[in-house]
Amino acid sequence: MKNKKILLMAAHFHPYKGGLENFALDLSTKLAKKGMDVDVLTYNLSENKEKETYQGITIYRLPSISILGKTYTLPKFNKKYKKILKNILSQKYDAIITNTRFFTTSYLGFKYSKKIKKHNKNAKFIHIEHGNVHVIHKNPLVTFLAWVYDQTAGRIIFRGADLVVGISKPCANFAKKLGARKTKVIHNSIDVEKFRPKKNNLRQRLNIPEKNLVILNGIGRLIYAKGLHDTFEAIKDMKDVTVVTIGDGPFENNLKNLAKKYKLKSVFPGRLSRDKIIEYLSVSDIFVNPSYSEGLPTCILEAGAFGLPVIATDVGGTTEIISSKNEGILIKPKDVNELRTQILKLQDAKKRRYFGTNIQKKIMKEFDWNKNIDKFAEII
Image (tube, rainbow, N blue to C red; front, side, top):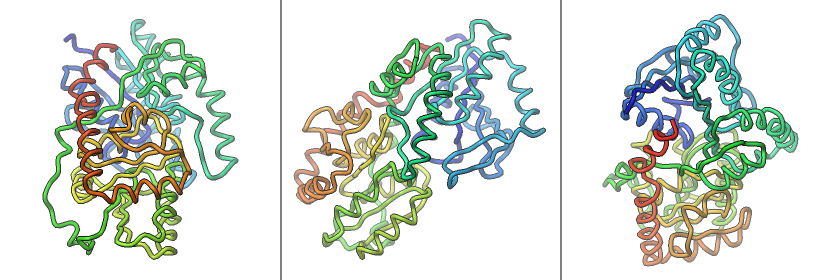
């Protein structure tokens, strides 16, 4: 394959962990393994190195500030910013790739692509969209401002892209509604072979009784739109249940207060590395994703690859993972009573094995990076 030079932009990147961050890391490193020269431009969130080489890619980090409880990041337009940007824009990229329209890196990517095309008229601006609805936030004002952003900057990004890749069909359709000229669906993916059970003594270390049903309640950013509080409401009077919620974010204290209110056995390990997440997957019995909005959730792919039975809300591209009643259980968002009913059903170990085996087969067949990375390489 001809050596292509790529600039990938993401608001959050290694060492930051999360579904979107893992996607960007996997995409960039796997393109590098395909023989491409990959640079990543991201924000410096924790005083990391300004420039770093990692797994065959070069990471540049722009100075930044975080707002809205560290859920949104903006660049600092200072001397360091100008220095890094000058270096980036002096290079001849064949493609610039951005992720999710509501991050400022995507709008900056659109602006930079115009300058990059002056060096290489054949350069492509490819935007990857991970959302399929306008942002949902507990604060109505934030929801309104997010809608305004979509109608302005969001439309500019979609219309300006040579190609918008949706990680699910609803993501591609959402981009079309906001003016995307050309779209393509390439499913979100994971390294399936990495998600295999590992024996460990985590249950003992966490003092979880052997008889307890362990519910893994989402993996990622702890925000209102993930609906994680609905799980606590659903199990509030259940016995012999432990709920594990992995991640961090502005809604963390709300969830901890709910767990305390209902006197639930709960674990909040914070943000974890992939290896640590695998430890928790290994001791879990059920995975719940009660989100109000999704693109194509990485957390379901990871849990399903493990063979965990999944209860998830029917939002976004989730139905492309759980496309039949044999592969998992879909419920309506915010339907706490139905969530409770389905958790009770999965107290049956035979039903858990049935759903877990079927979703595992589906993910191995359709959502493995080894199969889907070639589709990204082809469009570049």
